[in-house]
Length: 430
Ligand code: EPZ
Image (cartoon, rainbow, N blue to C red; front, side, top):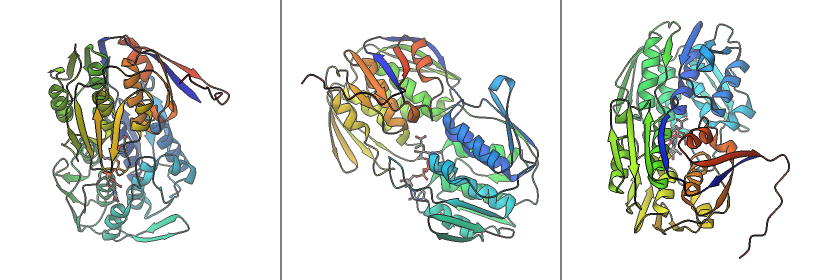
């Protein structure tokens, strides 16, 4: 297994460019199965999750090859000849569940395993299945598998009990080839939904309203292949904004859509950091200890849950007490256990975490239990006293392209080493 070695204390300075958004590229890759032909997708981030989605598409009969020096993918789906998502890949990446809508639209059937939960929560899929069922899919669940089939799906009005990102995307993809009009109410409004709408409309779909809470999809009888450039990753952007605040210094972050990080910008300014917003970049600078602030995670455009662990790390070193409320996932304070090993004062009570900032964290051997929780530990290590080792790199590289290189280019002292053998259990002095 790999781990990062981080020597804390270096200020950050310089410029870093954000990659394409993980949570935009995954549904766009899934949507390519809706129509045969060559799809060219640009600004594709080099991430484990993109590799998994590539393997799933190839298992279904598609051909996926890098183009333009690897910054783009050419996806050809002429050879699509299967509708079962391989269980091992489905388990590795639960978000492959939104292939269901696309496969129902193209193949009229899909078989996949129930994705199950993950470290941050149960992550049910009842809204996905409700939506696809409402469009006419016949869905059976047994032995941990889901079988869904349909002739031509029929458009309906669907109300989502909560604005689920994945359910909204699944329904959109199923509805584009359905007969008649589908209206999705209480739809998720994340920028990645708008990006998916733009990609689908580029294939000849007729969708309006993504980014608002009512989305209208007028079904069409056929689509054609398309090209698309993925939007920048707003969570990677927020992560580097917090890195500048926690390590201090001044960092210019390029390839940014400022509107997508407004909640993060506002919250960081409350902590006392300076955030300068320009057309396609933000410049974050901090030269003193952050002020403690309270926040709660909310669906977009509220403060994103995917930035909660990173902000928790910053609050651990802030001046004062902060209260974080996690309203999206029921088990997303797992970073707290490891931050406490670094001397943080964090108490978790249900959906809230109370953090008393300490002047400085201390280094430790820590392990990230999940993607955003892992990167939060790297951020904490940037400012900790001494050498921190962060295990769980395999989680982090699911969502961050070249994290250590990008941080090192800004002056962080971070390296990556590979463990071939299980690490001997070390007894640390008391
Ligand atoms: C997407 O997950 C993102 N993943 C997540 O990012 C993100 O945290 C989440 O949206 C919320 O913004 C991708 O886009 C690939 P949801 P998704 O459906 O679609 C409950 C990251 O770190 N729910 O909006 O799975 C669910 O349990 C990842 O990049 C149901 O109850 O999120 C959760 O509590 C983590 N029934 C809440 O809704 C359903 O049918 C939000 O889930 C669906 C969801």
